[in-house]
Image (cartoon, rainbow, N blue to C red):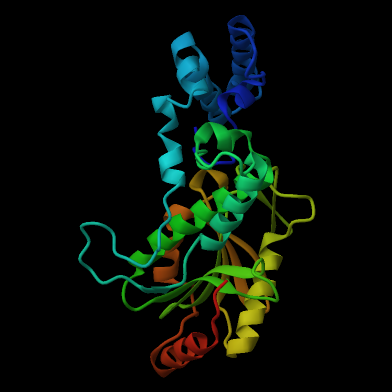
Length: 309
C-alpha cells in the first residue's frame, strides 16, 4: 500500500470503521475481495490493494500493531515524513557533480502543514509529534495534502539533482502576489526551460480535454492551467519562454510513464511518472532546446529575477 499521507488506510480500503469487530472486519474483507476480483468487474490493482489491507489488520496481532502505529508493514512512514530534503546535494556514494540547485523544495508546504497541524492538535501539548502516522491519518484531508505535496516536491528535487552540472534548478519560486502562488521547480538546461509541478493527490489521475481530472482533485481544479499561469508570471518578469509544462505524480497515479496534455502558448503540457522525470528532461523534446549563449543569457535573467516563497 502507498505510504502517501493521503493514501487510504486498511480500514478505509475494506470499508469498515476502525472500531469494527473482528467478525465484521472478516466479512468486509471477503465482500471487498469478491468485488475487487478482475473476474467480477474489479481490477488486479484493487484486488492487490484489498489483500494488502487485510495483511495489515487481518489478524489480532497485526491489527493491534497497526492501531498503535507499530506495524512493520507501514514502513515507519512517520520518520520519512519528518525528513526534509534540500534537493541541492549529491546522492550518497555518487561523486559526480550534480545540477546546481537553489531554494528549499517542499519548505512552504511543510511550513503550512505544521501551522495547521498544530492548530488542529491544539498547542497545549508540546510533546505531540505532528508526523506521527496515527495522528496524520486522522487529520483533515487538506492538512494531509500539504504534507503529501511537500514530500512529492522533495522526491522530485532529489531526482532532479542527478541531471548533472549542465542544468540549473530553482525550487519553490514565487510566481504571484502571495506565497501560495508558486512554481515547485524551474529547470534550465540544454534541453530547454521546464516548469514543473510535483503533486500527490492520493488517487490516480486521468486526462480529459488535455487537462487532469481524478477522484483526488476538486471539480474546479485545473492543474495544468494553474501551472501555466504561474509560469507566465515568471516568464514575463525574466523575459524568457518556457519550453514545457510538466506535472509529476507517483508512478501508480499516472496512466502511462509519459502522457501529452494540451499545449499552452507553444509550450507542451506533459504528465509524467516520477521515475521518468529525469530521463524526460535530460533527453528533451524534439526540436526544443536552449544552447550556447542563449543558455547563459536565460540563466542570468532567471538568477536576477527569481524570488523564493
